[in-house]
Length: 199
Image (cartoon, rainbow, N blue to C red; front, top):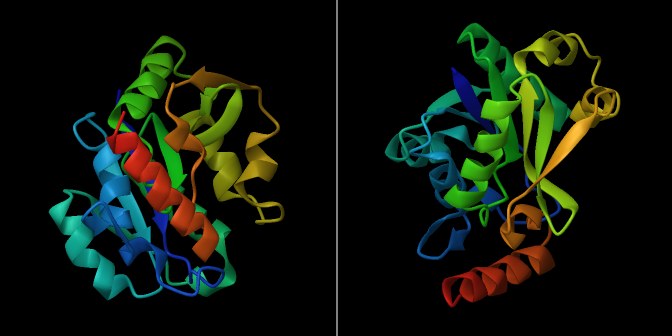
């Protein structure tokens, strides 16, 4: 299967007050740690940029990912979603995993668990979970791409994907639930990272 990972890194980080993708976590930028979770799985890794894109390009290049620049990033996250899925469609992908860049505690094992499910049911939407709670990434098959690309943005990506049954894929990875929208959430992610390293 020709699959992509779409990592959304085009936002303004307005609630954080600092530029989230370049915040340090475990000795590397948050974006690099997020991208690394999807490396080695045979995926086309598409990193959507916008705000301060020039600062992210070296990180993207070092991770072996490709950039898809969203010129309309100031209009909100769905414009980055469109940019990522448009690129995946151009590449002829059979499906895509999608995640914000600020989910740096997702492990390669969690990604592999989702991909195992995808291989058995490639036309089904599925989402990484921990103890029954949904997190990231979400897998979307190519049959849903046209609906996403023609959506007006109202309600975001979820307005499209909630029309479909979604299978929860238990990952045993609490990191699938961790994102970093605020300084408090960043501090919690730092603590969770340290705990993850001590397991």
